[in-house]
Length: 141
Image (cartoon, rainbow, N blue to C red):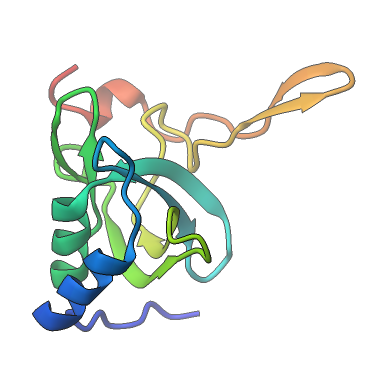
């Protein structure tokens, strides 16, 4: 499936959407990123209102970094960019699902996705190999 062209969301719809979404007492909401064409679950991160606003306005996914206490524009230092295809929230309005086009790897470990550990009756199994050396992804390491 070919990547769709992103159409920026008008400001009045962004404002209404922010009123609908239930942020936690810390002003955050979990956001699950899923590859739009394959359904592969890539990662989970956090968003605040500013990250939601920027993502909807630009189509380039932006999260909130709890460790840095700042906006985290996915791919800003690593080049592993997520482009938004669809922005959804669940029935309780407390979890987001971002259908994205992931350029490169999504995980900071250099794997395609963050869900590479599987617990089995035989122990923990690693499902995905490292595709990109994590030290090469980030300039601050």
